[in-house]
Length: 305
Image (cartoon, rainbow, N blue to C red; front, side):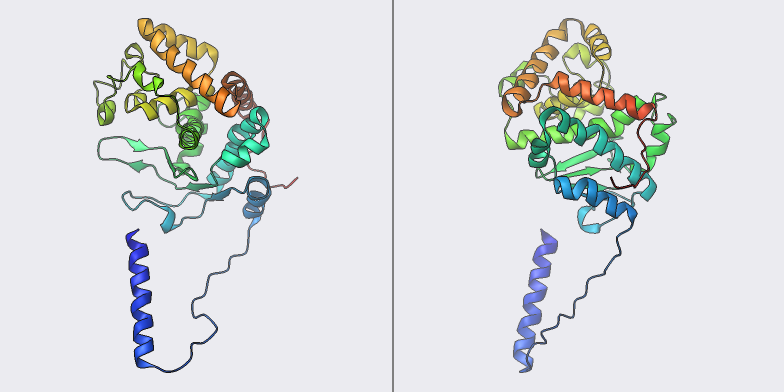
């Protein structure tokens, strides 16, 4: 907002000076020129797979105006961006298309993805995987780590599927849940289930990074607030198998009932508000994950069908 104000003031001062010191007519041709860029094959692929069917911009080139100046950021590698564009399309957009229909995806999915190469590091030892802004934009960070995640050599995940989910795919489902909540808020009953146990910024301290399941939370970050809790419930549920989820419920012990109560609200919210069965969505996501891991999906092709 400050940049916008400065720009307007500068333009106003320039026009005032011009009207005071010159009687010449303004040239009809603007002195401001825009760089013209020849679309490459990836740009053409994005237009065919994102822009034309969904009106979604997938921005992989670094843009200062889309970046958060509070963090040190770098551009996303183009090859990594190509792979991620395929993953987002196949595992997220196509999954919602399959379960809810393309009209749902066109209406609700964010209209912009912006990629940066590095994570956004905070001074408390955590880093930001992604953000959702105004129901329209999702930032995906750490794109340049994607090859290491996919070969199981980064972030403590030797299983590429688990690493891919944690750092990228779950993030998209998480942020998209925020966008859906901005469209229609979730029931207040959700907040009451563990309402006195949220710890805001303390979730990342040693006291809370373990033992969260017996406290009634599906992840450490879910302890931050009711909104993050809801998004974590949704995104973790649809990106993990029933066997994995059931194992967590066993670990939760008596708090299983708290997590189940939250899941029931998430399920009814998605069904009643958007006509989405989260079990059907999970089945679609997991099947597509298996396709990716088996090599059945070409993540580098820029062929346009």
